[in-house]
Length: 597
Image (cartoon, rainbow, N blue to C red; front, top):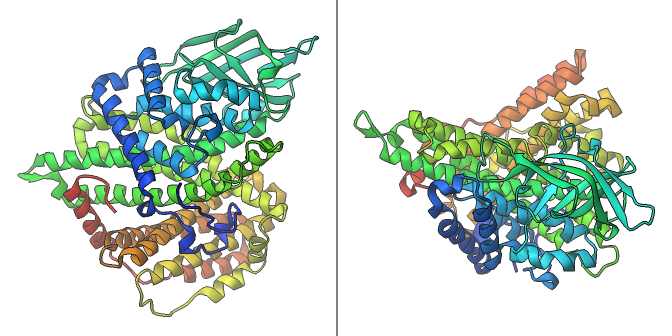
């Protein structure tokens, strides 16, 4: 069992106000031997069962995919989040993130099938199924003898999932629901044995159903020809008077939207962890190529602009790793509260999964954009060869692009972050933030200092504090200008969301670096310190830009002049030399030919 974490009082979004104690943060360097063994087992599984397939790992093969799922079940990977009473290892958010990362340290097109099974395929049944449903399906799912799929998306309802048209009508005898409609872009649909299908009862009651593949009236469309993830099955589905037993209704009628959105919330943490593995893999592929490729009589890894790319990928990946396991730690604390014998399991599960929806959305956005950066720069490092299918970076590039789209587009997630924080404010769930908003400008002005920073990471700690106060000022002005109309101002919502994302990223990296200094001393933590300093200074400059955009849109006249002057004063900081920092980071990456802390 891993370490129990509770970073900030159990309140999602509280990091925008409160400081987090080091002892309440999980970092990868503190993984237990058991946790390390789980990662080792997963990595070995990928190497022995996926990487060795070569080109076949990039080709769709139903039987190969099903065999791979079965083998994953044989080594226990599919039971990562399964309650012990159903044959799993027990609920564990940390373990879940570790396996999702490790599955993506190699070719991820085929392992996406496993990810879909252990993630959004099984989670609705785990958290929201009846005891009978869990007993019927979970043992076989964790063994890998049957496969599953999550069927939500429709042609006219992607991000707007609540607008689905698939209907469910209760028969006169009350024994079945009759489903009619269509689904698109359904992962694993080509071979899945059961589907979690979302439909509206009588056109309004958004509900979820477990539908078995052989049910009459259910038909699966042809495989979509995708840009990437070519070894992963993606099909449409058609329901024509599909007869589903009432026993297969998942949860209560009309509550399906809660299951869908909370499952996707868990899925966003999953995406962040998966992107972490992908980013490490992209970096390793790229640095090995850079060390082999010779131009002008030198390895291209020795060229400063190539080494800078490697450093930037490593730094972003370090920050993402810090975020993923910090989030997994606090998420795990909530999962420990779930009791599967509790009659209120459904509601308790919803609350546990939903508490950190802001943090999970942050991981999804930052993770997918870190991966896109790593993949894109990886192709650039390869030059023309990066455009050739023979080189692995080409498939990494194609496979990465979908991550910014599924589990909610990044645009939607940015707005979701701000909307969720505002909603929490309106419900009185973040009283400390409400207080901070009321005197935000005065608080920001009083926080500015000319004191010299003598200790390592002192200035970065100060910049983080100022960042939070800048956010308070920007959010307060947006609420003052738009009030409830803020939810329609997408540009402002997005800029505010970006400030929150960067704040969480800065703090996660800073907390990890400080903890490493406590554990190992400054000398042994020099690389983490350098990466943290470089990232925080660049992120802080970006935050100033996001805040300016918000104020330009929400303020005017003397008020705007005052706020911009205050923002200008806030942006003052002692300069750093990013070139020197990144050259040191790159040197270590080039030496070990992989991600390095």
